[in-house]
Length: 218
Image 1 (spheres, rainbow, N blue to C red):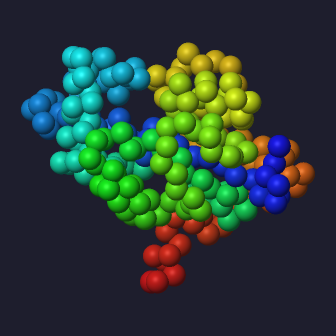
Image 2 (image 1 turned 120 degrees about the vertical axis):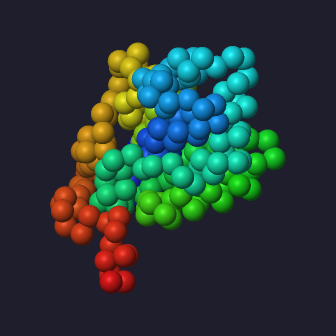
């Protein structure tokens, strides 16, 4: 069902969907341990067991990455995400960022501040920014996520979910799936048209969005 006011709300996860979490965490962890990053495979499971973590080691090093190496502020953006989100936003899609980043004890202030800074740095458009783990509690007309448990929970609650392709969610063969942001944009455009009855997407290449402020200032 579309939103009551005729607005289509897209719930967008960050890590693994818009922000390249695996790439940046690998850089930081390799630096801490004195490893060649290439020895840590990008093709990894949800629990990173391919990297040889022992019990609770992932949580330990993830906290260090966030608190001491500014990981949430320094992740690279996934290719095409910013421009695609701008085109969707310009066409009337309500972008609602939904991320579960408040799991580092005594680090919430830094997590929130670094997340907001990262969104500004990479010029990601959004109207709402939600920090929570139970994503079915957030009202959206469609969601995009990479975490298998989130995708399963959202779909079990009757939600439309685009699974953003990552090595750790390949086993999810049912439902909508996108390999990149071009596919995401096409799927969301189709969903919005179906839900709203009419939807005029911004044509690719026409003021694509992510660098518009810098260009206008120039």
